[in-house]
Image (cartoon, rainbow, N blue to C red; front, top):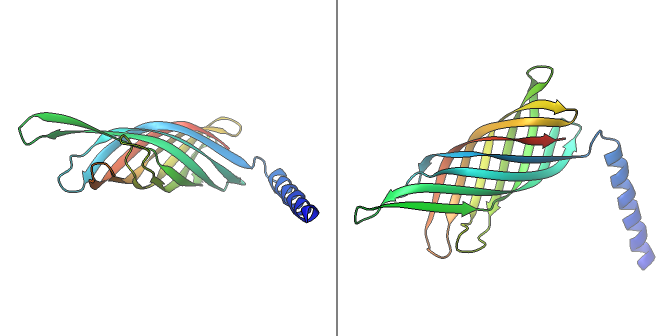
Length: 186
């Protein structure tokens, strides 16, 4: 019984090594940071702006398509006027885990290329400071080659974030525009 599973494991490992060896580099890594600019939100909630950090890694399909998994830290801040007339600053944190999809679409120059991106995922609630909810983003990218296989990556696009707090019982969403810069190793 043990020999059967050992043979299957060895076969799977060999298959993975052969398929990865056939590519120039079988994986990609992305580290980026940027701003979030709120555009619209659900009723009774002020628009919030903030910043984001993201790390993603995944499979490189011959530099034609990239599919991976990522984690981020999004921090939103907004100002609101309370019932008594005083101003309050609200801070909302999310820790989204998302699927990352990227595809280059056109070379702009010898060193640059335009691409498309899409992210979809969920931010779990890990305490009173982190809200849970669905996250989705879509946009365009410009990658400027630094060294073979490494790009300085600029991204911009549309984002949607749902906020749901299990402690306060409030639920709302926000539409936003994002702008990021990062290092893309493929």
